[in-house]
Length: 371
Ligand SMILES: [Ca+2]
Image (cartoon, rainbow, N blue to C red; front, side, top):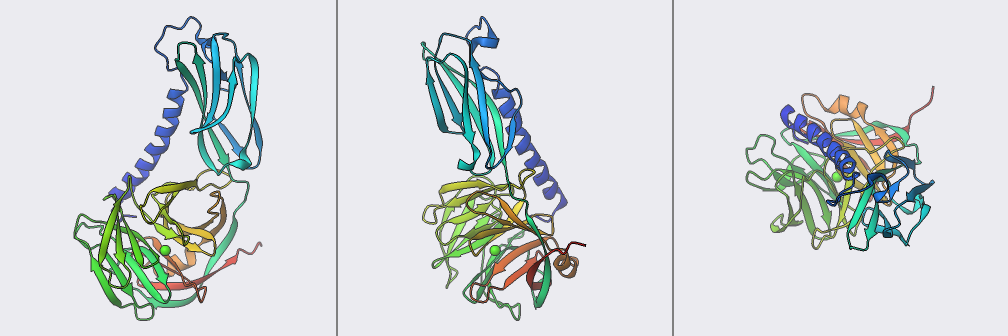
């Protein structure tokens, strides 16, 4: 999202640290976590019969097996994240649970086997389970239909139509107090109305729901809420972590944070009501950035790539990959990355731009022709 190389590097590093920390956390917690003296660590608690973390494809059923050797275990519980899958009382011998992955959304989950003893102590064994997508994304190419002017001083972070009104959010990569929310004219590129924010606010994605505009901030952990007509600030919500892109499905605000996670939030509180992880058949798609909700699907552009994804909002499956090289090569110039997707509801037109780009492009997407 940001322009400085250092910041870009920091983001890449932070994303990597994030993933490694999850994996390391899970591996460390896969050890027994009791503080009593164990007479036989191998059989003291119930453990999964597989040592490594699991990866499977959505729709498959996988057996989760384990063996109970210790007669002192009174109860065993199997959890997927915070959901209790099954309880065994006075368990003995080899046990298993068939997990049907089609009942879950895609992504990484923590599997946990908890052993309970008469002393009320409990100990656990943990693995990571990844549910990959069963859908190979359709590959499309962007073709340019029309070209409109775009103010090349705008560090575009969000772009969305409300009827015929085009709103743009611009960020503040040089920490000069440049963050703004704007109503712009598509045909002339001119700013009709604007509302600025002082540093250290660094504006990010925006979305319009009802009479309100929601504008994210990068690291300020605030979502600013404006009246869409006056652009007057009404209130603000707080959230944890970074803010990257926003869109909405007519009911919930949908937010990206640079990872593969998308959170669905209540517009009246900004509290998370649902989370999905965006996956293809090989793994997570990280760096999800500017968002747009287009006819029941979420579109996201991938930071640093000339690529858009179409995502199923129900389960996180990547349905389409849309190559935007033609748009970027014509539009980027000396500017920064592709960032900005706007869909006009009535005409069904799709518009793309980027940070410091001179143009906004109306595009259509066509399937790649096989040679
Ligand atoms: Ca958008």
